[in-house]
Image 1: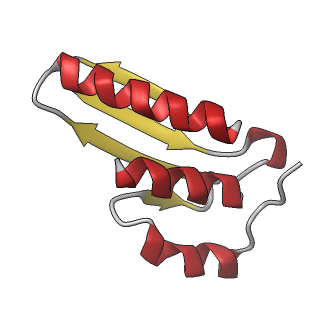
Image 2 (image 1 turned 60 degrees about the vertical axis):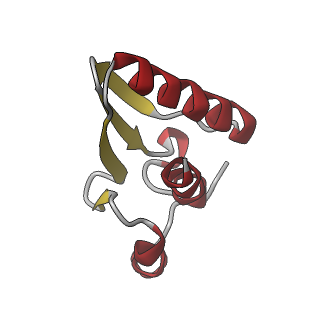
Length: 94
């Protein structure tokens, strides 16, 4: 099981998480993405799904037409772990 990040670890990860909202009290990273249309949004979700599957760490997300909302949290650790930070960085790189 991944170890939950301490507040100091979260603080040091902040520079890598541009565009992400860190909700420490809820133990979540959140980000919204907006695309030209549904096809672009769905293509993005497909690329994220491949990254997530490879990492063995899956986001909570939703899609409405051209918008994708992503929430990352490690449920079995009860909050944020390095897995969340790593996946958020990879998603941002897309």
